[in-house]
Length: 162
Image (cartoon, rainbow, N blue to C red; front, side, top):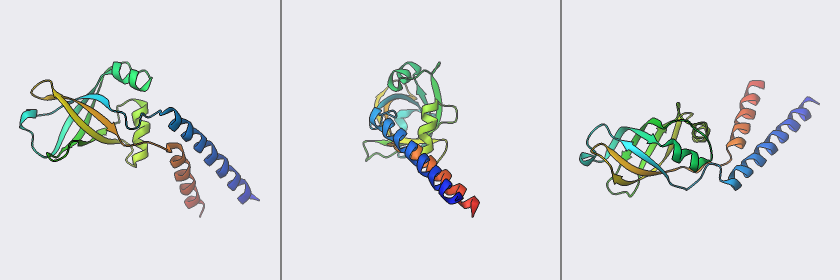
């Protein structure tokens, strides 16, 4: 009897997660494949950069963030990140550390498997100072976030039960 209760709860949880995820995808809550403007601050002169990884700060305008995600953050964000430059590629890859970020980015980071890492690709647009470049970031697609959480929890609980 207990197995049927467990199975029923699991089906209800998966159904609720699936409905939530389909709704999020229909509304494009996470703005998949849409570029978002950022400023990348390099530790050294950005004219002298070569291929490789660099620790940078990503500066996010609160006004642009609020408009883009239809949300409300009070002040600009400055987030540490690692950017990988390749001269033969149009885009650089980037991994943002989202520990002190907006809730939606923390939620998006959860899908990648790394709790505080949000990855994407960057298109450098315009140099605005010796150490700063205006760029656009496109994050990896985020979908079926709730379904992943439910199935991970179910598998974890099943492992505990065994």
